[in-house]
Amino acid sequence: MYTVHFNNGCGLSTTTIPGADAADSVDMTPCTDIGNTLLITKSGINAIISWSAISCSDFENYRVYGSYYYSDPFPSAWNVLGNPTTTSLNDALSSYYVAYKALSVDACGNISAN
Image 1: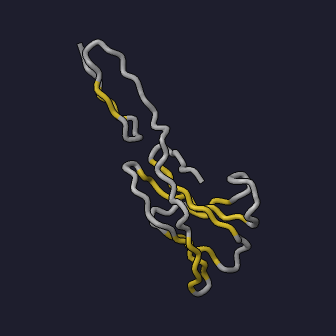
Image 2: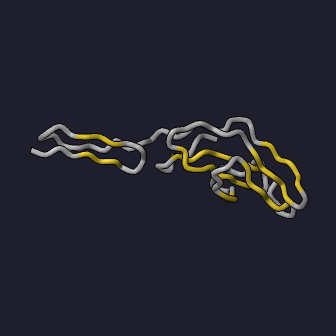
Image 3: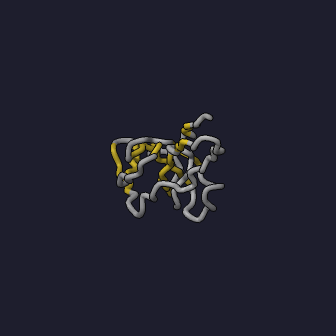
């Protein structure tokens, strides 16, 4: 009889009992949202987009989006500007983006609510 120990790369692991089948429970729970903490400031020729850090055991990065209009459907009409691991991202003031969103992403690729 053998036991199997596995880690699915998303922070989930298990060990089987002898003679039992192993099953993978995929992580479907995203990290928390950054909430209403997005702040845009000016520094030289850049707009600095910043937000409050979130606490999540399997946090991977943030995903920052920009849009030409606040009313554009999200996320289909918004562009990904970057995936920083810190709580800020620079965007050139010469860009045409007037709306920004920042979401959290976990190790399994789950994205927080907007």
